[in-house]
Length: 254
View (cartoon, rainbow, N blue to C red):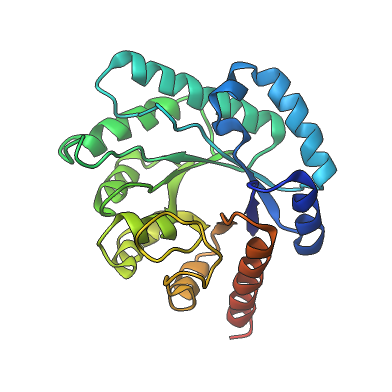
């Protein structure tokens, strides 16, 4: 299933969803101000989703100023609170997944002990939850995939898996994308797709940077993950959707 990240105006989203029958990945509940008035935000956004014609939904969780591995108990506490608020929104709106950032900060945190603390956080977060809403942890500034794999191996909860953001891996890591895929393959259930030239997180249209999507995606798509396009214009989102659909059709005809 393909999802469109809600980075463009509602009317443009409606046009895209009508044509593509894609779902929506919403960033509405990643914003602290919206979580502060959660009931109002949920009511408002539920109406907007209906007007857009959204039938399937993924939420992108909050991340600014938050960190599940923090050594400061108060930061860890507010991170848990914000994650729980987003989970409540997912329940209310019928979202099938929530994407949370790994929040790894190179040059600030040492790799030693990081995966253990993050795993402990997610085990606590998931302790009272079933698998009706999937939680996927996304790479952002992570320089390599091994720590994410370690978290996934440690958590081992039916609702927990990984989101591989190929654009982030391409511009924030020197590890080849093929190695990212190989290391994380068994844990990936969601993809974030956008392009760049390896220097900045540009969120370009697929094919406008130098990520070799046509080489990398067939193996990933064979896992039947959900896929979210994270480009910043309607034109770029539509071209990305067409590329993925063509690759999917090629697999179904094999």
